[in-house]
Every structure is written in structure tokens, then in C-alpha cells.
Image (cartoon, rainbow, N blue to C red; front, side, top):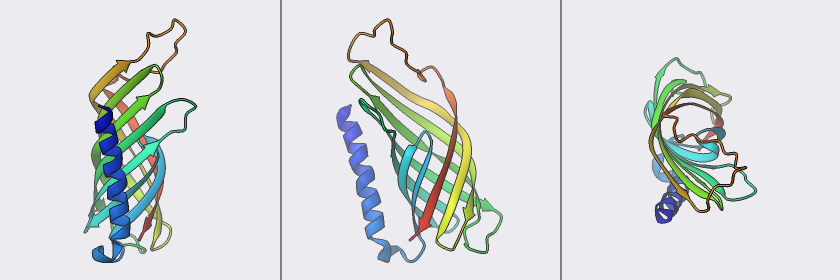
Length: 178
């Protein structure tokens, strides 16, 4: 399973790099880069490609930890549907659907999750190039796998989402139209 995690990580980095470096072939303002914080993307960076009033995007996220790693790879579809903005042709209200892969690994365990997320949100345009996005919704757990590396100690305190089939999701971030 580690090879799948490495593959997803490398695919995300390659896709972000490819979209950012090939801006001339897409035309102006079709590519957005983003940075934000949320669940289940954690601290994240991403790229989105715009197709009229829709966007497709990927992001890579993580949280700093003393030991181990906590990463998230997300792929999302954004459908912009309501309102208007003087600073953009893109409608500010959107629905968002996507998949989140999360890997939480340290010396004692390796947990893997896949969530299906649905959110509603709004773009707040600050200028023609820069904006803030805010969204909220729900995550549905599609897959969970736990691999214990060591037997748990009697003093092990761990927050376990493995039995939670639905969790709230929320995010806030900045985007920049290239």
C-alpha cells in the first residue's frame, strides 16, 4: 500500500507542476493555484483548471507532526451556479464534490481513509486575480484500513475516526488566477 501512497503523491506533484508550467497553452485565467486549510485537506496547496462555470482541481495537504506523517490528496469538481461578480466572469457560489485520500502513519500504526465529500461555498473576489474561498459540507467515509505496527500500550490515547461514516468538512483558502 505504500507504493499506492507514493504514486498518488507523485501524481499530484506532477499534475500541479504540469498545470502551472503550461499556462500559455490554457489561456489567461484558466488556471488557479490555491493554498488553504481545512478538513480533510489539512494545510494544502492545489491547482484548479476552469472550464466555463466549472473547475476541476487537485490538492496535496499535510499537518506538521513530531513523528510520522499525515498527508491528504484530494481531487474535486466545482460547479459555479449563482450570483455575479464585477471582478470575475465566474459565478461566486459553487457546489463541490470530490474524493479525499488520507494517510496517517507513525511508528505504531498506518491508517488509510478515503472520503467522498460534498460542499457548498463562495468565492470572495478581492481583485481580478486574487480571491478567498470558503466552503462547508460533509465527508462520507468510503474506505478505512488500519495496519498496527506495534501492540498498543495501555496508555495510548488516539482520536479514531474509523467508525465515523460521516464527518463535517470545512475549508478556507486563497486562490490566484494565473
